[in-house]
Image 1 (spheres, helix red, strand yellow):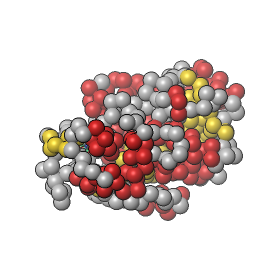
Image 2: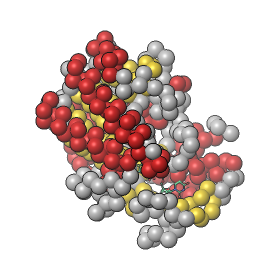
Image 3: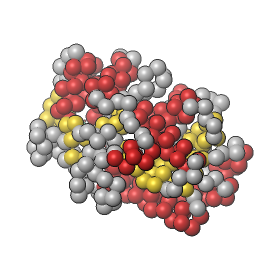
Image 4: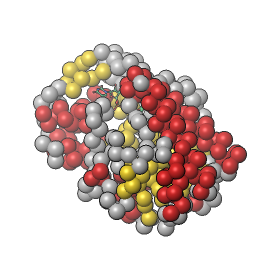
Amino acid sequence: MARILVTGGAGYIGAHTVYFLLRAGHEVIVVDNLCRGHRRYVDPARLRVLDIRETRPLAKLLRQEAIDAVIHFAAYAYVGESMEKPEIYFDNNVAGTVSLLNAMTETGVRYLVFSSSAAVYGVPREVPIPEDNPVAPVNPYGESKAMVERMLTWMDRCRGLRSISLRYFNACGVEPGSGLGEEHDPETHLIPLVLRAARTGEPVTIFGDDYATPDGTCIRDYVHVSDLATAHLAALDWLLQGGPSEVFNVGTGKGHSVMEVVRTAETVVGKQVPYQIGPRRLGDPPVLVASPEKIQRTLNWRPVYTRLEDMIRTAWEFEKTRS
Ligand code: UFG
């Protein structure tokens, strides 16, 4: 049992991770400014409504709560928005992390699990993507994650701060019975939009069907949010047991096209999903699939959800509650 501070714990992936941390017997405090998170995802007794850029209260909290390790989710996460307003990504994601690192240094908290992204690879050199693929982001969101990863390398060398950066691929699904959901505003992610189309009859737009892939639509590595959560627990254990700093991909290693997502959703829902073909979305790489070999070998992490259909089913169970 450890005392963990989770930043951004009222968000989609953060709240799922808190749910699994509590189940594993850890003590958890959540810091979230609620600008994009959901108050109802967090037990009020654990929630501290605070912006991570407020270094003084953050340091006070780390000290008062005798925190052993931090899991850091708090960040903006829209690629498109980051192209329009890069400065808010550097402010919240990068300067926010600098503030957190200052608070951790001051209070002697030595372990950090960081929420990174496949976006750090930009358009990858090889697929499946190994962790040593060049880091070459193609948008400010990915750049903000890459910048933090680089800061963490120096924080280890100069300060002995141990960290794990987890490069997520496409998070999806909802943990059954958790009371949590996937609720972004606006929603931009494929699976919730496909399921919304099934529920409302309003067509979802497929961004391009002329890519050099078997069916012409983009391929992604969908990983269930509950499996992402357990990857954080494994990373945390690794650090607490004295493991060195590392960077890991978190994906299943299997790719699915947009069209496959639509067809699989139709099977799950039991009716046709209305869709239309639109132009390509700027900055979408045709194929993003992880090599999950390193995290499997090092942390012994394996996804429970390996079938797209099972992942989509958990998302549908949640989507149905919205109608
Ligand atoms: N897509 C559509 N129609 C939609 C929404 C998405 O066709 O309405 C397609 C996209 O073009 C893409 C695929 O569905 O090919 C998945 O798109 P998402 O928006 O669900 O996810 P992304 O792959 O764009 O984004 C994910 C993470 C980001 C991360 C990015 C790395 O959500 O945080 O991978 O490139 F930055």
